Image 1 (cartoon, rainbow, N blue to C red):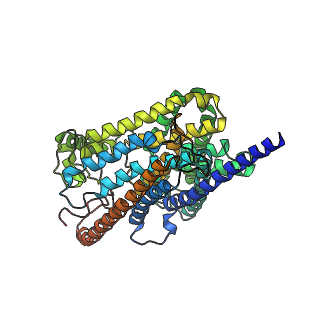
Image 2: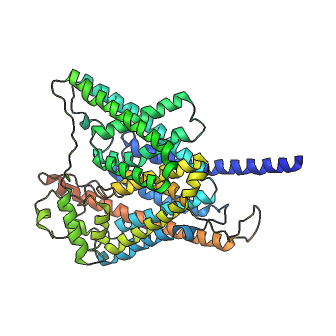
Image 3: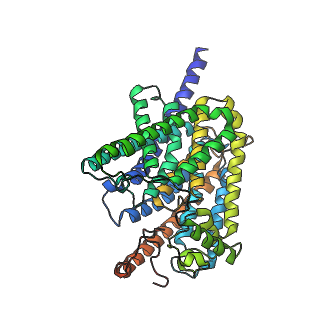
Length: 509
């Protein structure tokens, strides 16, 4: 009996240490993504903040996919192809549907961006689940998010203090800070805010008073900035996410929902104090952004994208055709043009066709089916695991909803964060094959063919990734050469897309 207990303790310790080891390998990736996304102002600029983030995000997708595939799986029941096939179809769709534009300059840059993204996050999710460290990875990620967002919130309050003392009433010009556009900050808020409650529901610090106070302060300030900037995309997408997780998981959502409502209420209180009461006392005229029901100039862009999607139905007009095509609708000719139509699904339909959107719909349907199968686990399993499923599902649903009115899957910081959130979500919803053999430690040849196939894929990803990064560098150099023409033009606004200005380089440059 004593020997059996010692053996059990040894297996548990070995498993726990192994899990912590594999999570430790992920932590530098988590830290880099959060720091680069939130605090790029504190980093040395090489090619420009936006361009640096794009190169970081592109290299992140390639390198993480490569190294995850190199690590042998501990759980043989988690099959990479079984779990990742819907996303891999989307990857193939981007590459195949980019062929109509195969004669254009830099034709593989953006299809490669989307293709690698939809390849990378299921591979990351498979790797986390196969190493049996899903809960540990999710909790570590949430902890680092809260720490990063806490410092961002603290510095936002400092910026607020400087603005008040300097008699600067238009707060939205200085808060949020560190982003080209306040909407790019709102993309991160959409991904992060649903995860904040996990810091008080899971993890070893959840009962520590100081930690709880820091989490409440962080969540409250982030909600305050959402209200300050009237980020309708974030508000609406978060509301949609709450409704959908309620439908999916029922009463299991209540602990997460209760904390989420407390955070939102605290944010509203901070808005009343910081955005209304104090400015009313200090300034002669208070500047407050108001909510409105308009489309902020998006409707002409959506009409144009819709018209594009029908030109070569269902294949689209080709990669980057939004930048080079002749206007199809009267509304778009008189509208303020942008580098994208502010709707990722219409954007993909316009350039890659409704066939690509159908593949994305298949991916979402498979994920939804897996979530439905997890409902019983969320209701009757451990609360900690249930809360992880609920919160990461809400984060993904909010991000997917926000993508319907903004470039959530185009901006580099947003895509880098989405990569990690979706990767952990995919690990939580991954399916196991009950008939698959579980490899034993020290055994030979149990899953040798699968290991070899993963190694082949890993090095294929590396080769293709290096070629793609070289193409990105060539694209950037061409943009730099065209920058003189842009600088000399009158009233030239920034039209962000792959680069900060979406219209570079010019066709044929």
